[in-house]
Length: 182
Image (cartoon, rainbow, N blue to C red; front, side, top):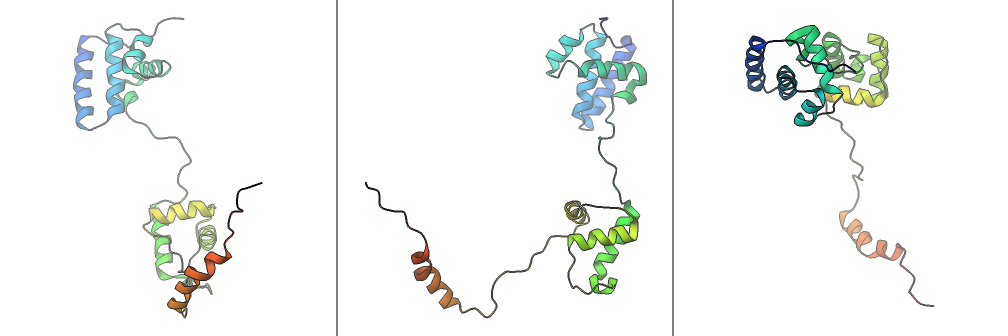
């Protein structure tokens, strides 16, 4: 297997050093690491030596060098992260926020609260996109909405009776361990 080296000369190295300083100022540590790897390659270090010194996996260094050789500085910059693209664009999200702000009754529903399945149905009807209810909750959080649950307490409960029950009746109902013995 042929060793892989970055293409360039001393002027290229000076340019890369300036580019590295700029990346450090911009607080882009991954770009700085890639640039350092390219500089080491220009100095004649092998891929395994670069990987060992930078403490990265040896399969990443040839990728950096290949990107440098084919695309130059652009090949070392941060790219898009992999993953599914967002289903609702900014305009659609704004429209959804308006619908949610107006309330479910104003939208024509009989219920007084929004639920994830209801919002999922609205998104499907209005925008033709299908969301999982769990992802609907993430979308709502991104839009600045908080999750709210109803309080589960009795409004007309007598607090003194509740305390008495918890203190005296409940402990007698709980199971107690059997005495140890033969």
